[in-house]
Amino acid sequence: MAQIDDLQFEVQRRNILFSKDTTMPDLTQLGYDGDPNNADPLNSDGEFLLHYSPSGTSFIQKDVVPFQKWNKLSDDPGGQWNRTGATTTVGTVVGWQTEFTNADLTAGMVTFTHNISAEFDVVHVSIKDNIHNFIECDDLKYTDPYSVTVDLSSFGTIPGTWAILVTGITGVPIPPIPPTNTHDINGFTLNSIELN
Image 1 (cartoon, rainbow, N blue to C red):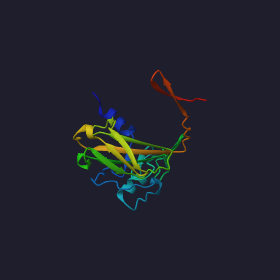
Image 2 (image 1 turned 120 degrees about the vertical axis):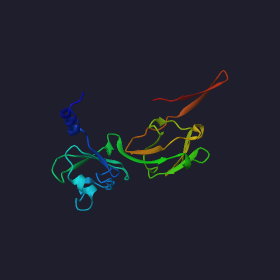
Image 3 (image 1 turned 90 degrees about the horizontal axis):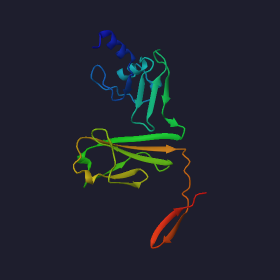
Image 4 (image 1 turned 180 degrees about the vertical axis):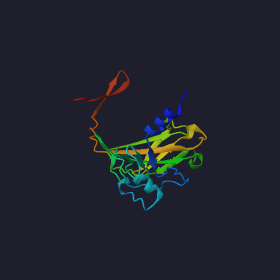
């Protein structure tokens, strides 16, 4: 059985993760969603909390593109926060997400307007169900550079709240699609790709 000393150790070594939606001790939300290096402790209780956070604290900016994760580097009040996860070795990653329920569906389909434009080399869409499993939708169509329509009609009435995540990556070299050749062999049509 855990002893109080063991529990205190667990509390002290935990990773603190804040976002604008973090519930404060007075049951209000943290509310701040900017660069934590610019948090002014005189502006709000949320900014005060970020300003005086210990080292190792993490902060997630949710409503900005790209999503940003920040880690505090020192215990000093107003100490430096370091941004992580905004760029990768493959390029810059940006993201957008929202939640939806069955009431948002029309004939099993829903269209989302996001802020990830076609200027990105790779755009990916993920759907999570109400128990946080990634699911494969029936069909997905990019209706324009900023919209995607998702078909979930085979799921019937979807339970609870689901989420869609759209990510874009820039700086990814996309190889050209090699030419294909069509061959007719004994009545069967085969496509082959020329590899150099």
